[in-house]
Length: 236
Image 1: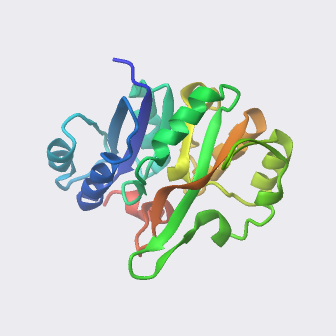
Image 2 (image 1 turned 90 degrees about the horizontal axis):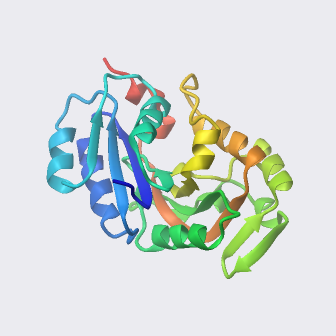
């Protein structure tokens, strides 16, 4: 069965986060969404949580590889969505905005990769803009074509140079055409950290990016964020 979009969720021994992430996906409003939970060797009850929380989701288990990049690539190989996004299990898509992103990709075939802002923080400390919090004033001055309110198509050269200086892109707020991801060879599994940034650089060099100026995802900051703590993905 072919899907319009795919959301790939890598995880390792985090069944509680997986439950919350899958629950939030129900409100994303993305039509015809394929959900793949890519389990990098969990020994907890993740499989049971997926079965009860999202019975239609696909569950992929593999022996522990130690890197989110590896399990993301394996899950992509079994996916079928025309558009693909990657969402760490401790993060979440916000309601409605991912569906808006998919519709924009439908309307603008010249855009290969679309990303949006994200809310970064936690309930106790509050939330802030992902892009603004990382000192990205220069990003907002990049040359672009604003084709709709809050949606701009970025000039490839200036955006690539900005990306090389500092990464403005949160992985959970990206939806891309599967052909673009495949053409770049996916994530580099040899990288312990910043595999997403390295992929964005390759994709920014070759493809056209669009920016949706509203938050599409939540990056929840806590002591053991999977994307920032490589040891959490390494089996005992």
